[in-house]
Image (cartoon, rainbow, N blue to C red; front, side, top):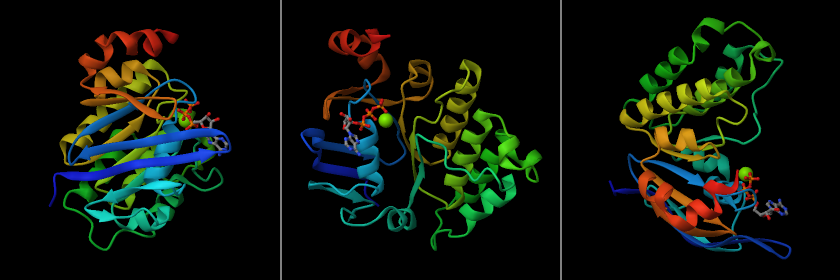
Length: 240
Ligand SMILES: Nc1ncnc2c1ncn2[C@@H]1O[C@H](COP(=O)(O)OP(=O)(O)OP(=O)(O)O)[C@@H](O)[C@H]1O
Ligand SMILES: [Mg+2]
């Protein structure tokens, strides 16, 4: 198996006059935990959607596990090992926690990688979802709905998990708990890519950070390199 699990080459996506992804070439190593950061409108969600197959690019390519998946839709990429959560929560509020998980378990991959089932079980337990299986999802507080969505993404047995702002709206403590669970899942073999605004999360979890700005890759490096990068500090971290 190749060391690269997911890679893009010169991806371009335009919306009218806006180039939301401008020649983005990014490469993810199997087993890494990567954070994608950048200010509002930098193109994070666009890149995320291009990686998932929610958007198809105007030009450029995406490779997953060594195969060209540029023209494949999201569900086809999920079958090939991608797990996804979105910036807006997509759990079914009228269904119980168990039923939500069952919708996600409905289509597991034929060739679930080793450890996938135990990673899913671990997330259920650490997020305390196993205690609430028969509760309607609408009764869960916001952060636990986010956790349910992560567990649902793990149900299909992905070898790479993509998350768009999984800690949005969480308290600092909930954010830290989320980071710790994701770090553990990563140590157990899952490759993880997180779009994230919360710098506390990035400091806790990231091994490699990619900074996007105006649709382009602006900087890439370790957490220390990025947080000490003068231009990054000036433009991104200092914006709050
Ligand atoms: N569906 C769309 N139609 C038109 N313009 C879009 C669309 N999606 C994104 N854009 C534009 O593309 C640019 C990048 O947006 P994107 O949502 O990818 O940024 P982001 O980094 O995820 O921002 P945020 O931090 O607010 O989530 C922005 O200028 C945005 O207005
Ligand atoms: Mg976004």
